[in-house]
Image: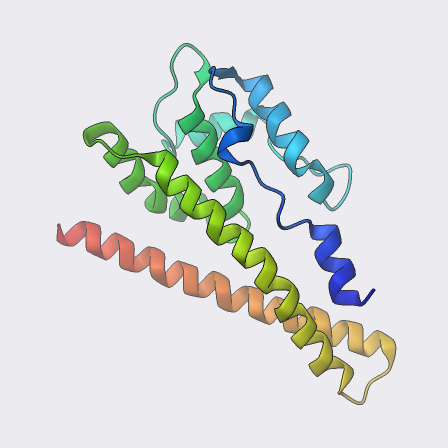
Length: 187
């Protein structure tokens, strides 16, 4: 198994909360955390890291990142939005995530917006990204292996290369957040 395949396997990028994984009944916060732990716990870097905590969920609610909860229970829509937050929080600030999700939250409150349809589209994109990641990793690995460097230096070069791409993707996402904000101001 190549380094790229090993990394892709450990990251388990295809792991996600599918719509069918979300119970039809509303869940209490502890149940939401259990659902996220069941899906994402194997993708954590170490045991000290947490997938989701009560504090995180409370901060998302206070920050109005998703529609208000009712009777301390989280609906299927809440869980879908929390999963979107979970996916974006590694690259974007909470402020940017709020800007991204605000139009969806507004649509859910004022229109007949089907979050489920949007979420299914997101899952398809996420699964496609997981497949593309392995191919991109292999490309980075080949480029690094072609450099005249010892094994440790090659590992450092691979880390630097991946960090560089991560920054490029994050900055591209931030530019798109700014564009979304400008569009919202113009309407």
